Length: 213
Image 1 (tube, rainbow, N blue to C red):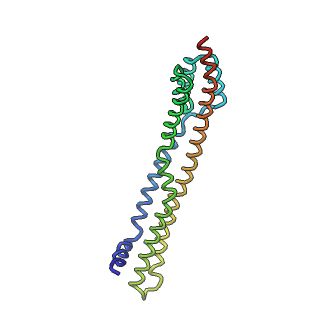
Image 2: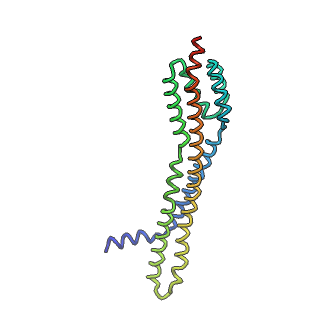
Image 3: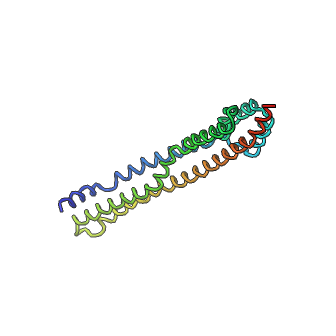
């Protein structure tokens, strides 16, 4: 019984601290959204035109020209391909390994901080629900100390407690939307990277033959 009373005493602090926690989490969520939006707003290449130019240059054995062309393309696809072209003299296996490593590094960079949005999207509603439960417990405790006052004593407290659930949803929903949007954009970027990398590997034999000739 003493343990129950102590736990009850802890819960009677109410939901105010949960409100402030959710407000702080919302600020963190918005900061991550802005930071990721800026990072993922880089230049996107036309993969068909990019691949055609890449194949033409490599098929002619113009490796130095390919490096210059890639340096002009401020895009993730060009950065990954350039890492492979830097290993051209070491053979196809080295080129493939270099591009695979660059792609993995790119994925880590693109997905940075997305776990924060995923965590908030999954858990903010539960934090809000916890605040609601605390508020309801406090309301009924107030009612027990003022039984003659009737239900009007707790109506305001319950309404205030329900705000915590609404606030939790307000934090979670944008976080989930942003998380899914960024994940989709990252998949498209990495898909274009794969296409560009495969074009390089296809063109390598011809480029190597031209250089030998």
